[in-house]
Amino acid sequence: MTPPMQPESNLTPRQNALWPGATASPLADWRFEHEYYDAVREWIWERIECNDEPVIVVVLGATGTGKTTLREQVQCEIVKRRAAELAANPGIIPFVYGETVFHPRVGVDWAGLLRQWLECGGDILVDTKTSLPALQKAVTSMLRHRSPSIASVDEASVLLGKINSSSTDTLKTNINYLKGLGNMSQTHLGLFGDYELGRLAQISGQLDRRCYFGHLPPYPDATDDFRKALNAFEQRFSEFGVEAELRVNADMLLKGCVGCIGILRRWLMEAYIKTRHKHAPITKEVLLQTHFPAAQIMKWRAEIAEGASRVAWMKDVAPGSVYDPRG
Image 1 (cartoon, helix red, strand yellow):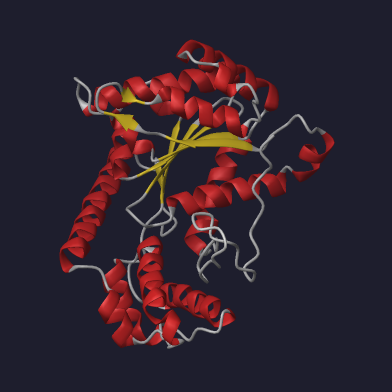
Image 2 (cartoon, one colour; image 1 turned 45 degrees about the horizontal axis):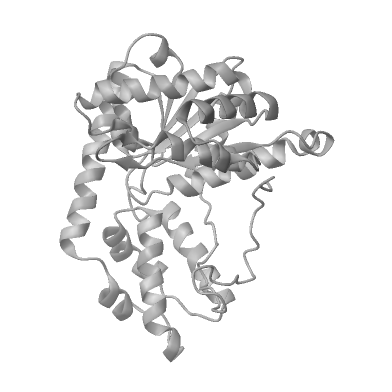
């Protein structure tokens, strides 16, 4: 059985999985936490703990806001909160997860997603199940008997599809298929993706009644919250003997990463790579040399602006339907 994910040590570098023998960077396998994660994570836990019928928890956010990191933290939280139950009954698993892939000719790769769920559930015979009906039957049985708190889907916006129907119709068809799996196995579903998943709010009826929307926003400005994040990165680099001048450059960093932690992380990774052989500090000059192209930054800003409009529309159409940690 795949072991439950445990929190990584923040001090010990791991080996680079893509290059055996190489030492990982200071940011490898380091998961940054901030209050947005804490708030949305608790909101997710309450939805899956308190509902006695299967629900769909949808987490929306722009590129780089940390949706995958949040999903991993939710899984760690489930392990902690169900520790006694998991110890008493080895047959129970805390969660399953997978990532959706879209194929131009066939649409969503359902077989691939179901195989990932089965592997999380410890199915050693997953390779013998070659047909979609066989995989669906196996997944339903596994979820029912192994009782995970949630079955999650990363990159869930793929469910919008690009087949010969409108995006809303395609999304409704795909979500109904997932909902059916959840209903048959009595399992909550978690969808993590970009703002396009907000189109679920256009679907009425029983499906919409079971959907909860959570928004993982970027940092809006370079005030205390963002500076706390920069301080955490500074401390992380310091643990590895690297000086990083981040808080003094907070305004520049906020503009260059558009308030998104994942984008900031990639930027700082490039800055570290540029300086590591020289054992030099990460200064403003280095940050300017490694920042993202202006065209890419403008694209991210447009995505965030469009996403904010979609979230505002969702709140207007159904007040109280969207959880936002900023209020």
